[in-house]
Image 1 (cartoon, rainbow, N blue to C red):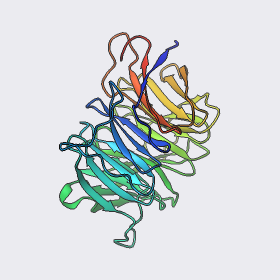
Image 2: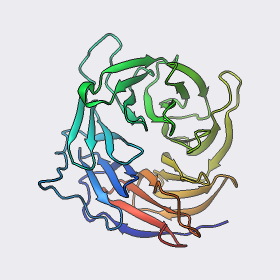
Image 3: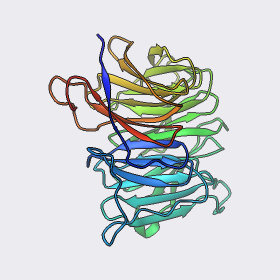
Image 4: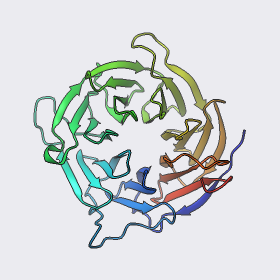
Length: 327
């Protein structure tokens, strides 16, 4: 099988530096964060930005780059983190900042700056990780935003690169700078699985919508698909490896129907993967390193493979659609 994805349009404006995170929301907007410290919301159909005005306000750029982005399942909120560990919750419908937490201000012996953050799909909590390799669960409620509710150790003191809540909100996956991946059960605050599938840093993780599979992207140029239902210590878990990128794989996502994987790489390409066939079915050439990719969360129209959005080194947000239709 081979698929063709066509460039649909770009954002009408560009960030002043690389786009380090992008997410297509359930409301058919896209949110992007940049190394220039800015966050922006875009209309996916046109690439127009949400203008400042009496009913909506885009946050002023942060003094340091924004490195982590997570949006709620209903598309209402965006959670994002800065380079030094400021975590912010932004209401995407009103433009209001509803929560801020300075994780770099020490509040206890095991407190640490948050490098990566992930919003619980249920919206009441968020997960974070930093230099220690531990996973922290915080309140995402406006009244006590950022309050630490639990800390779950991974057993390794390795830098946490990326964390992601499962779609059902019951588990969190965390990747490390040395290639390990950890699965935590949030309700029991315990480590339930770990994988050593990569030889180098794991930059990005994506859950399947049924929460059974996890796709990882690494600096070792590979993607690995894991079955998270295997028990801790049983070995295995990796069910497929996807090779084809010629440099670091920086971002990854899984389509809403679970058929296709999506990856962005430092080799300046985006690849679409047929998960069942374990093969790349489309390669899209970009202008620079592709730091983030995100499928449209709504199921594709009949006869199409859907659509996705990407962000990269040149600061431009780009939309792509399958050749079979508008997605």
